[in-house]
Amino acid sequence: MKRVVEFLQANPVQYLATVGRDGKAKCRPFMFCFEKKGKLWFCTNTTKEVYKDMQANPEIEVTVSDASYTWLRLHGKAVFEDNMKVKEACMANPIVKGQYNTADNPIFVVFYLEEPHGVIADFSGNPPYEF
Image (tube, rainbow, N blue to C red; front, side):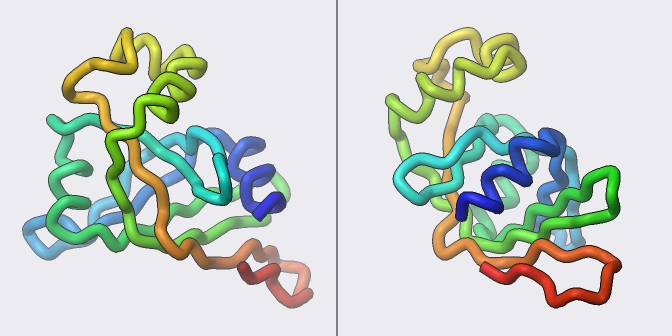
């Protein structure tokens, strides 16, 4: 998990894919918040289409690559949890703070990936790191 967290932190703009409520693939820029007690946390808000898509189908995938053409693909089930400690910790990110102002903003929600799995790979020909 440490390697996954380090890769996400080093590459702060990831892309999160969902199956839209129209049955079509949707992909949008996203940001990883942090890892806490083995859970990978993200945040969004209840007015966004991505939130509505995840409510309808919580299976998501996150991907990101770095300048050396190494990439991460991370799959899991989005589990929303009303966790004030996590919300407060998310406020340490100035982008999140600027959008929501306070952790108790009623549209601000956090979620983690249940049973995350995926790979970190590159074009070297070496086997990917699977987790």
